[in-house]
Image (cartoon, rainbow, N blue to C red; front, side, top):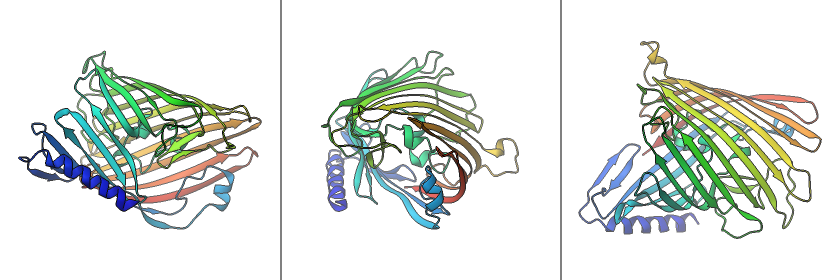
Length: 391
């Protein structure tokens, strides 16, 4: 499967590159190999990314009592992610294509085409991470913390085969507004459009009141001289076989009993905010989600996280410019019938940027707490070290 997918990708890249016979190739760390430009009939940009990670305990977050009691405490070193990306344009610079392949597991994460001719109206079709929550949309290679918070697994709508429209009005003014709206399969990554129930519908509206807004990235590497702020509201509804989604595709929430031909109804919304100024960055999200069906009690979830980071050199000249300190608190409550639980995560991290997000080391410490439905409390901690490089 890996070889077949890679061959398909290389064929696509060869075709795209062949459109522009006069173009020259350029390479830059993080940006990858660029062949062709906007003035050429076609272009292609190829880049790769690897994450090499050491974990002291809990390769996956402990969320249930059994995870704390019988969780894997084996120290591990692994390639957490290994990916190749290709994107560019064909015929016109606003007719774009994109694709991303997971080398370790051998499947396509993203693929599609986008028409981005106007600022206020663009169209995209394919498979990608739908623009719902900031934490999830930010690439794993541009995160501030070593990984996403514990609420991501419960609330993300992740990847689907989808079609969407998006755009931006009044850029760099007090009325700077961005929007995204679309429809997805509701079946998650790698699955088709068929299935019982209804598709997934999503929408996001974002206000950038200070003009400019905050990009899909974490850490204020640019050292914003002027404050940047984005405030957003997102909503999603779907009906289908799954109650949660991830890069692996569709799955089920904890405590949810999957049955043949069962249609699950999901209603959820999210508020998020992001801010950057002079080396300081902060972001936060608040989520609610409700899952119901005809054959069992529904599940209700509420959760949020707050996160911030700072390049200490801005306050103390003797501290290296490459060093950032960051922290996060995340929690969610889950209830079904008479059962309820609360999960918490407290994390601190140190980032050393060799070349921005394209080459960095992250060291983090995380403490996990669970107030279980049995009224018992569990806790444990974890240390991780990761080198993330893109080229």
